[in-house]
Length: 499
Image 1: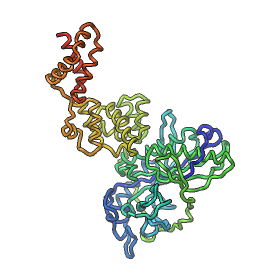
Image 2: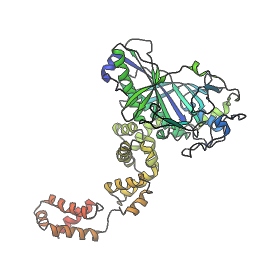
Image 3: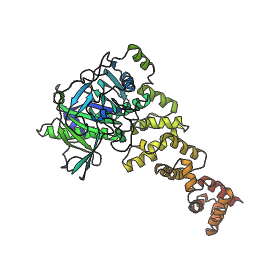
Image 4: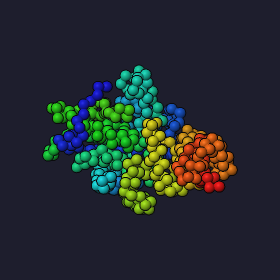
């Protein structure tokens, strides 16, 4: 893939105004699929969560999942949308092997929810109101794995394998209207918007929202228009971006790529594009289809969805606190500065920090572990931090540190064991023998051995050169394999010097 030429980001913004749009796909965590009784669970053997309905076999008929409808209404309400008195499913026809029946049941011109708004707050304190056009119900497609190539993509692959387990999983697609006026904040707006949607669906309890599993995916639409022009530019759609960091990077990259093309007299092709996490670049996919290409028509086997006013109000009464209000409340309760709280929001780990605090950890400890060591390991491994460890285990780790059972250094080794699947923090401590040595007798033996090897240290300490104790402390920590409390060792060394 030839490397695209990019314009400096600030220069691009001088010449062009970015216009954004996002399509966020949220898989619902119902027990069964959208239109069949097939199990809806992640990680099953390929092509086992299937029924004749999933495959579109002759004589099979879809039945709407009632729980999925309730979840969709709840999400629509949380997005500030109006709920349609009547909405209808449609057939979206296309020929691609990820749907065995060659069409997808979706909603087209009659979505379940429409006309909403989501408020996001940026690091600068700037508030952006993202207009929501619609949130509609549909079924997810299957998963293709391209084999034999060097990139894992269809280009250059020798053949593809299809797993229909995901085909038919309940999905809500949230579509924004064009978002204007973001300017230099455009990449952060993308990240923060998807982060709020993620927190929202987790708070509602309707989705696991694990981006690394594809439970929540974002298609980022970006176009540029010359400063002062009203007409929108030609957009590209970067498909299936599956991390918050990648959303931000993809928006920035497309602004720089498109600006270079336009400034040199070129034109933008309306197309889908693939995001490459390893290189931080996008590449061309296929020309973007218009709605007419899908030949939508009303699904003949399903009646319209007509929720009662009573059901809508019942679900409205169960809505959790709005994300931005929750952020402000937690910041005050936890006593964080603007910078500290923004650190958590930027990491996309607010839900995990909150769950860790709820499990018994202090807010500072929860923040330190999630945005520090866990985020570092996730970055090295190229995965989402949420996939590495549970909030309960992080709280248990913090408790062991607070109790003096572990130093921070030992705790990092324990965390390594937990991530490797060796058990809970306490199980890793026991198996690896990593607890801090709190027996003064054992510490004194090690101190005496260190002093015997360095007989002049005591005299130096007695002469007021307290820093000389560092050599003994270092020797003791090495002898104890880092499992001694350095502060306690220092106390004992100074006591020996005064004896």
